[in-house]
Amino acid sequence: MRTRRMIHVAVTAAAAGSLLVACSGAGGSSTSGGDGESINVLMVGNPQMEDIAKLTKDHFTKDTGIEVKFTILPENELRDKVTQDVATQAGQYDVATIGAYEVPIWNKNGWLHELSSYADKDAKFDKADLLKPMVTSLSGSDGKLYALPFYGESSMLMYNKEVMEAKGIKVPERPTWQQIADIAAKVDRAEPGMRGICLRGLAGWGELGASLTTVVNTFGGTWFTKDWKAQVDSPEFKKATNFYVDLVRKHGEAGAAQAGFTECLNAMSQKKVAMWYDATSAAGSLEDPSSSKIAGKVGYAYAPTVETQSSGWLWSWAWAMPKTTKKADAASKFMLWASSKEYEKLVGEKLGWSRVPAGKRASTYALPEYKKAAASFGEITLRSIEQADPANPGVQPRPTVGVQYVAIPEFQDLGTKVTQEISAAIAGKTSVDKALEDGQKLAEDVAKNYQ
Image 1 (cartoon, rainbow, N blue to C red):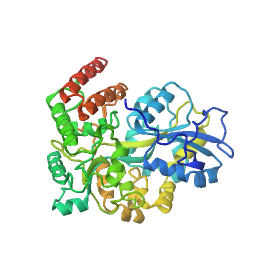
Image 2 (spheres, rainbow, N blue to C red):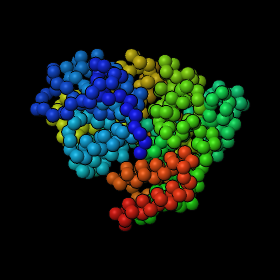
Image 3 (cartoon, one colour):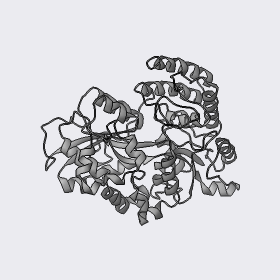
Image 4 (cartoon, rainbow, N blue to C red):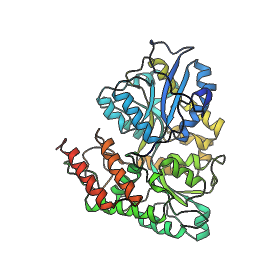
């Protein structure tokens, strides 16, 4: 795994963005969540999380008296940290951001508090307003919520409209991957230092693994057949991976093997690439003129396809409460606020409506202010989320649900190890054939547990 880079460590609401010593543990006696209490929150280092760290003290803490101590980490490091803390029952954190992959597995292990009872008691929260795909992906087999969505996303293509216009290129609303590869070649070096496209190359099941697996799906591949036969070295998986690696090597961003979501966001917003395929949630940051040089100049298209009608992933970064917390009342108050309509309105009014953590509530897309700010990307985001089919994301039946992952505990390790090899292929240190040959052996070992 790469040398890890901490974005923020223990960023408190009182000093968001400052580097502090690590938070203390979450121990202590159970209280009602009143004045003088504090909770520890571990979350992924995406722009939306950095926004909530800035807003919490003057709004949530001011109203409730509950201090929130944030630890914000890069995605790969976050995944390792939260898994270690929750799986070992260490109890350092009262709240953590996890995703649709972890919820059913961790719930089955008995690691998470159910949250439906808290949401049902809070009329203002309006649980019925949550988008159905988000509720389904964050619920247990008992139908109860075990995480509350902070924002939901699919994936889409984002492109620099000025560059396309200058080259006389019209990007289709529903492009194929070959069309995107052809466009990337035409716009590569369109401006000094600009490359044709940004694609994640950073190893990690949730980094390179997420974007690559959507390409594998639409090329006709899969990690496993329905009866658990490993397919990592299959012709379809190999064709998709060769396409992806060739595209990013020929026309992709500088340092692609170390580029994940954060690096691609920076490259796109700073006009270092002409296109980017990634999370729909990135649009809010690209449209923020305070940080993006291309705000108002971005075009959006659905995730490129080959053999499937759609190929966008389905994900939610969501708030979960480990069973080990002794501050459930205070933690639940924070989570309900952080996923509320009230918080979305706060972001819109204080930071700009394009930065609202959307993709989780139907009502968001009816807000006049948000509809105006998200006019260029809101509809594609919502439709992409609605069209994502975790049960049938490819051309053949799957053994588990999941668009960009396989919903088994072993996939976290398998996906990371395989993408480490593919990332090395992007860096020119190995071949795709060798990477997938090694990956097939790993996948076959995992499959033996289910056959």
